[in-house]
Amino acid sequence: MAQHQTELLIDHLDNSLLGKGSVEAEQLIVNDPEAAQEWHFIRMAVDAVQNAALYEQVGSIKKEWQATHSTARPGSAVIRTIYKNVLRAAACVFLVAGGAALYKYTTATSSGLYEQYYSAYDLNASRSNEKQDALEQAYNSRDWKKVVTLAGALKEKNNKAYFLTGIADMELKNYNEAIGKFQQIIAANVQTGADYFQDEAEYYLAMSWLARNDVNEAMPLLEKIKANKSHLYYEKVSKMSFTDLKIVRYKNLK
Image (cartoon, rainbow, N blue to C red; front, side, top):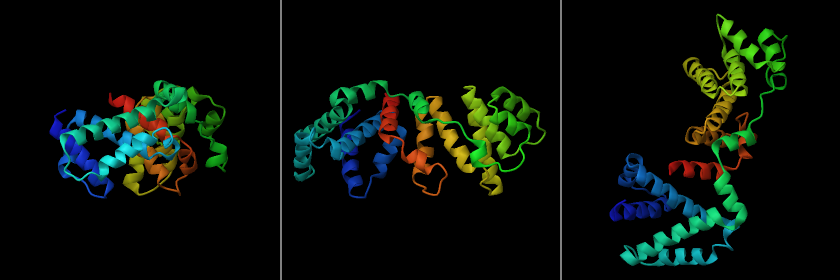
């Protein structure tokens, strides 16, 4: 990437920390994959420097980072080079500080996070207090193929039928089909203004994206849930490691 573009991103970082931003830089990040990767790398570096748990490990780096910030701007090319190198060094410390961190970085995967956080939906505890129909009975019996067959035979499907079939698809590792079912629920609710199985569909749609190694699709949904304390899955998502999610997303940018 050109030097002037790197400097534009550095300026954008400074302004963003002050609550401002650059339209030119935002457009560059959106339109240039290399710039987007560089911006993500810089943001990770800043997170590393600011992370209180790493203050002892990056103390000297943090001091140098602060020293460059106190220098009058616009700075010289030397200052910018030091500044960029400091950010990269901080990111390296963040990623490889100790064997555990290195292991986390090398082994973190989208599908691995899915395996860690996925749990099957409990119909009895969640929604149904009425007499169970055949579809619900098959679901609670964990007869996933039967769930798919019964749902496919329905002339009219409501959100519950789509949702239970979506979970059955996940259990059968048919993640593309599951994604389609959950998206159908969300689309139906948008049209009707209802919220029937909305929270469930959002959470398990995010899980399906993770299972399919599409962390970039999952992240906006998980961030939306984490920002809404009234969401049914707020507690679950709040306990997730967003650091791990960010590491996986960073690796996918390469």
